[in-house]
Image (cartoon, rainbow, N blue to C red; front, side):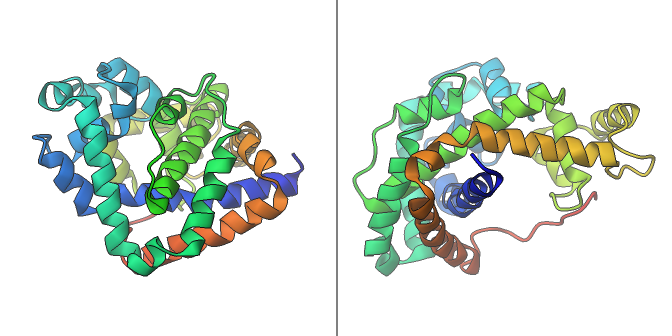
Length: 287
């Protein structure tokens, strides 16, 4: 892939990804999963995202999610599976996605020719994804494709997200970054959620966050104020470039014209999601 093509793939990912991510902020999936008896908040998130893997233990979830504190995961997994089997969680997750997209996009968008085309393009891109060393992608790839175009697009967005995510975790490991170190380094860019939000949602303490920051300073990746050094910025750029290369196959398979078309279509739907308030306003910066 040339750098232009790599950038095109990343742009397409950024356009498609919000279609999947919207379910993490919407009340409908929380309601559907809570109706099974799962606790709202971390248990719903962890069980909902891990359910394609089956009734796995906390170790598998920590490994595949990468930047969550293992002790935090252990509070909810595998306890969640004694409340609701993964199959029930998957069905509730899809119902929640359906209700979320219906509310945020509206019937006209869901039944439009653009929705059908976007779903077909995204599923075509996902045909080139590989299962090897991609546990979250592979688990989702074994799920049936929903018939409704908007849910087929949501499913395809999930596949493309987890495929890129699995590759990104490999890039982080190559960079020698632990899960919490990756969060601290990302937070230091000033464009990520605050450290308080990262710690609350991933289960890290202020002491653990500070220790990770100190380790990054020792590596020369952060300066005394906790800002990125040139070495830190370079490492982040190299990690993202490697992620692009590892995620090239879907967009190579789709081709330049179809990738641009999917970017436009998905970008339009994602803009509608944002305008409808799908994503909460969060504090950004080092916090």
